[in-house]
Image (tube, rainbow, N blue to C red; front, side):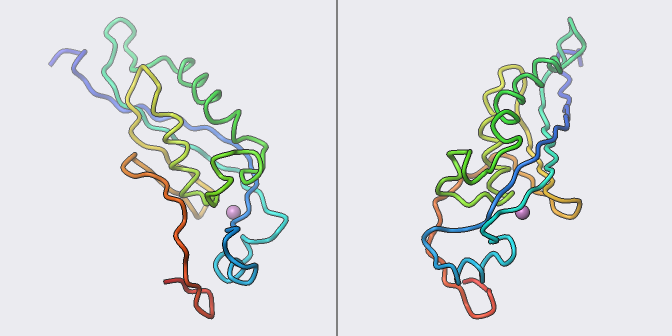
Length: 158
Ligand code: NI
């Protein structure tokens, strides 16, 4: 096997800080509180998110690299960090005007933004919301507008 046939995966880590509020405008305040609990706080709350992006590609025999990290960083900075860092996800990112900015949805939106990098194939986006929560997306799905939910007493949903 020649070097040009070697598929290697490249991982890169980034950070951004943003606030969000988990809230659906089509539900009542009481239903939102039952569904999202303290994450429905009207003032929102912030996270220091950690973003891990994985790319796969052939090793360029001229450079020994899949992609130039400076090119990747510039792309991620323009497509994601400049959009997501130091903002209110609900108020400042138009994609979340009607879609609740859970980290699941943030993860999928970031994947969509990074898919068009020309030099390597995007494999996976992983977002850590806290040291205990992380979410991964590999590109097989679309973000749906929310369906009505039935919130049961105690906050369980159907
Ligand atoms: Ni949160």
